[in-house]
Length: 89
View 1 (cartoon, rainbow, N blue to C red):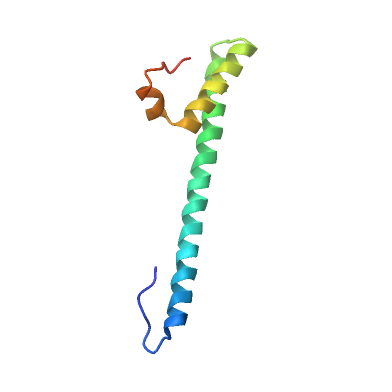
View 2 (spheres, rainbow, N blue to C red):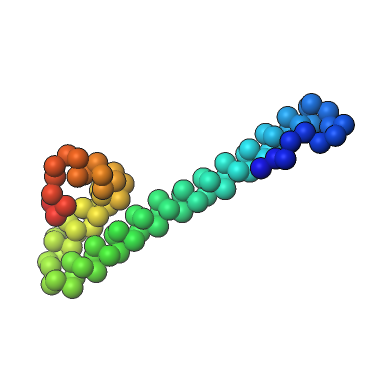
């Protein structure tokens, strides 16, 4: 982030620099958070399908496992546990 006002730097230039650096920092955070969300969702779906298929589940059971994994990934595990719902619904 910014090191502070540079000697002789006009206030308007300082403001531009602060805004630019802030936006760059926010963009980096958004990219990381977006990657985490996508990775979480794709990983949950893939692993749920692998586990379900390895158990020999039917097509409908595999689909239900994928839907459950998607729900957990999108809503978050803590919310699911707080509601008292079982993880294998």
